Image (cartoon, rainbow, N blue to C red; front, side, top):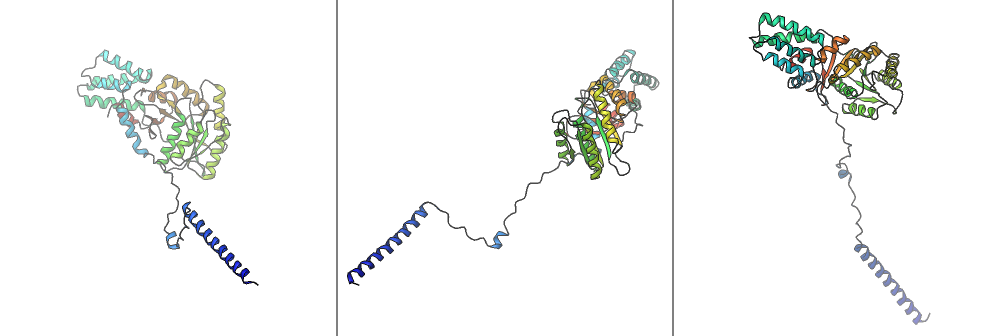
Length: 371
């Protein structure tokens, strides 16, 4: 091969190598300018083990107030209220001398407090007789007499305990009934809190399928204290929801099944018949331990009319008086018990989540007297 050809190919190869080297240098330079991240350093096993694990936040449950402290707190609120009965009692005790006009005023105050004509006449006659003998010069003695007579009217001998022990291993079933607007669903949720505070397992049945969001409202109450709710679609058959709730309660072995029903006008025969059906369907699975009628304490005489109808349809076993705060008339406690022969078992004073407590006759009277 001629020497000039060999020299040409050597020079050509050298040029190609130089171009290749230059291209590599330029590529690396451009790569660094674009800000490409360096390769991630290897994580050694010892370092990886110290990294925190991802933990989902735990949803905390509310702790309901102990049932034993609720009535004392509600009594203090009642004592500080300005209802008609409390005012009338305070005015009577403030007198040094009680004349016939004072008794007439006192009697009118009692009637206006929804105590009822019969209980009012009975209380006034008893007080006039006892105070005429003992006199009222000593306020402490007059107060003691008044307390005794009021307590007798409220009747501390009535059994106000809730029947919460099922028979034959079945759960106790509590049916909540009442008209629209009494706070029935809210009361059902508050009662679940009371039972949880007493360390009972509870299941809620949302059988109010006609009011929009009623089931959601009940489920929210239950979720706050860890209680499950059996619910169905809006407009579903209330009896089927109640049946499913009791069936589920039996399967899960809960202590109490609380069944909330739709608010019903006591004047609507069809709706009342349906409520009777709900009770009958439940009793095919387990006995109904309690039928609690929720009454708005501010409704007065109208509340008594409601109570009589519900008693006849579903055999009411206890009364829950809601809204018995400063705007209510405390005499309704006596009158509703006299009319129905059914005790007031629970009382609500306010809108707080724990403003529902077992009714205690002595503490209620002490609250009215401001003690």
